Image 1 (cartoon, chains in turn brown, yellow):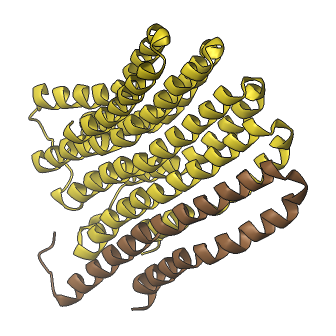
Image 2 (image 1 turned 45 degrees about the horizontal axis):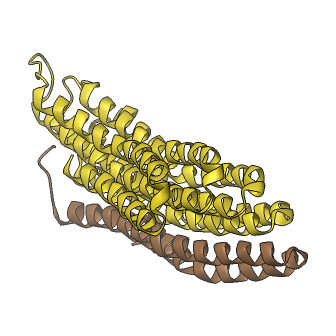
Length: 84
Length: 308
């Protein structure tokens, strides 16, 4: 290390670590939630395969909503890296 | 080692308690059940053994003097311990789910005990691969020999690689174990659907594995990328550490989520084998969506490593 640590360095370091933690921890919830949605959709399709289209469509809507929190994390991470 | 032992102990405990439960219900099948339980536990134990091997190597390794940077080498062995220690939790718990389901299934369908044991071993082997990735990263960390590198940023490089693979192995290992366990439960209820269930199980396991492969790739990139003097600043070191953390932690959710999807798909296909094509297709879509968050994590890691 070249020995020059000033406030700006600390803020940048915190930004990058913060971005990593935001996206890393933020990815846990949506992925598991989408897993529950997808699992139940598969269960439904095996009970009633004719409704595959409808069930898959509904599943995707549900997963998209659950995904939104993951996208928030991504946006916050990218904002922290590039904008702040 | 400690953490790795926790995982395999939970896995084995689960198998044994399930075995004890079913033996008390059907004492006449105790022989088969105990045999399968022991095989299953042996596999769940392997992750603990991986940790033990690494721990012993760490204790008895003679550190060569020469031009190695002692601080970096010290951090590398710490990171190696973290990688296999944390990484073994997933494989151990996952393999436990699988063998518990197999023990349960064999009691219900003693006639298909051979089929169930085979499927159990396949499921356990795949759920174990994540711990093997962690073991590989540990070995690289121990034996790579970082040479006369500067202490900074390389202490963060090795820590980042270890954390990435360690955490990254937990979710997929557990998810695969959960999924394969449910597949075995399905096969036990309807052995005639075994072929279709096994196919879907393998496809689902491959998808679940992806996020731990992301973690392995990022560990390798971090370890083998050469960092110039500009990486010695505090922000760049935070970025290096962050890139490992984000992929490692980000893989937990996707691994478990994909495992839940394939679990339900396999149980359903066992009940209604005719629906295997539409169910597998939807399973793949659902797993891809659940995987997307770990792709975001990978994206953030690559930005942190290459775009700053």
